[in-house]
Image (cartoon, rainbow, N blue to C red; front, top):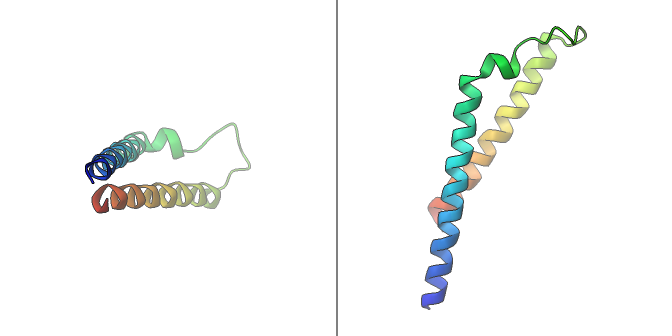
Length: 76
């Protein structure tokens, strides 16, 4: 029984580290928002709706990754 407890503690620490890395990635993206999602003058065909769609996809993937890693870190 001790081996299972150590295994789950290690797994919980791994998911906690992944959660913190994912959270840090979101904070980085928020601080460098204009650099990452601003207008690109080399792509004149890019419209505002295309940029908004890209932002929405990135935010949705980040939010799901944050929720999944947080749930595993909390529930294991």
